[in-house]
Image (cartoon, rainbow, N blue to C red):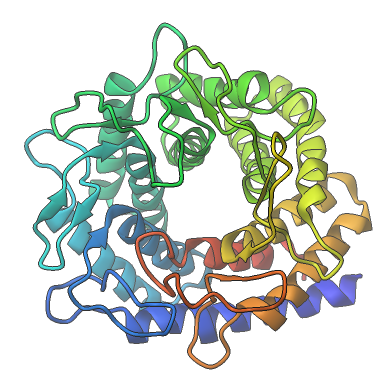
Length: 398
């Protein structure tokens, strides 16, 4: 197993530095309008006038910042700086605070709503840039966004965080992240990425209020979001934490299994860590219900109707690699390391675009590549696959 893991480590470095990052450097830089293009289609066509999403830009900043931090390559710092400058120039609402959801291609605001999921990703990215460079303006902005989320989004009565606000922080009627989501006041997805953001911020800023809220987020997952019968994550809730969904999202299950463990580690609370580690193996095993013999992990199952989405999107494959490897580290059970290696074999064979770079959006159960969805775009970003490479390169011992 040690030999296979060392081979994996080398292959991941090759994939990150010779395929994923070069794609974003060589194809996505917008020389006309600044920053990065908003879209490359699944057929590898640049859409120069596509709008620029906040999530895409925050994730680009995180990716190049993290690559700079871990690989000490000045080339990656150049693109992290490019992302940072564009974000400071265009995405921050200088009047009301927070960041815009979407810009036009020319950098003017296109959608000024304050989606909390997106605010969290800017925190995550700004802290990573600070970790890589020591740039205090980024840490200060991350703190500012934390305080805005706590002021406007935190539900002091029922706990948790509401989803979306207008430009001037009025709760919206349409709270959805995307058309496929339920229009509910609280979601697993937003809470997971606030958790991720607060974890990164607490690494660098040992603020007592932040510590309290990060611990609270971990407990929300343990008490409200992880289903006590199935150990899958419930996805949508009303303001009273009544579950409003009947889906298992296998990718989110396995992503949460390692992000919760990371949050508890960074928090440094032994009691919380013990509680989390009693649960995350069960969550990972629930996620494994979505894995197939070829190493892939399918998208989701509706347990009320029995309908199964057998498509294999790019991001659950990446999260499965980190999530199962994390359980291997916790349990020393090689079954989980084997699942990581099998996921990588599937990714190499079906998901990586060896001809045009980066990863395809998805592959169907019969092996058909999805070219209808973006290669790069509002939701198709370099973060899941780059983070997977960086995490495992760090975790696999020499």
